[in-house]
Length: 264
Image 1 (cartoon, rainbow, N blue to C red):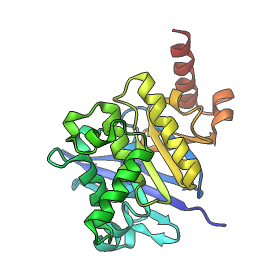
Image 2 (image 1 turned 180 degrees about the horizontal axis):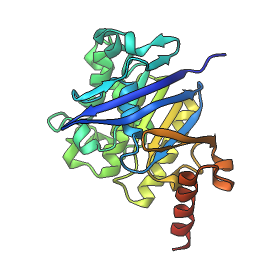
Image 3 (image 1 turned 60 degrees about the vertical axis):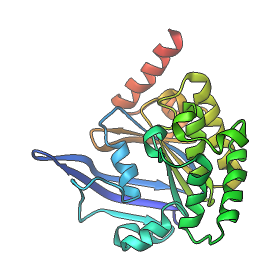
């Protein structure tokens, strides 16, 4: 059986006072229902991969002609803009790193979640709002009568991240890409957000790609981990094996950093 997501020789370059290769002929595969981590230091290219999958790269980025991205059998790089918009949010969704900037500051939270349904064919505003409120409740947004009507700046960081997750999960996508979903949160809220993603993954059977610089949050979350360095995947292994016996020096350095932080 073929993988849900198959990426072959993905090449991404940025033009800004010259040309910089962010992703260098990288191959990635994710099966349906699988939970996979993409780990690397800042600047390693992991976010460029995530944005390339959704075709959300900035205008100064270019995907190389030898790149192939297939999702559920469809060639994502060959889809026209309309088809890609229809797929984004419905079949593949993303939880962005900074909900404070990803959310519309002029829209109430429930309206923003409902807008996902309306943008993908729901014609009834009342039905869309009901679905939004139900999902916000499922992701554990507290004090829902108040927070659903709040603007993003009126919520805490953890509440904003839950709203982002509600938007991503509303249409039961087959794949959710979470880009540094806990980086701006304190340790307690980090654990809550990761557990929420795990719960929703188990309940829906979606695949989850967790993009992070922090190997420490991966151990209890992901069955497989890919380590990225300088635009390339340098190791792809079951997470337990990677922690026990990393095969690449960059993986080993990340594992040692986790051990040091746990001893501190």
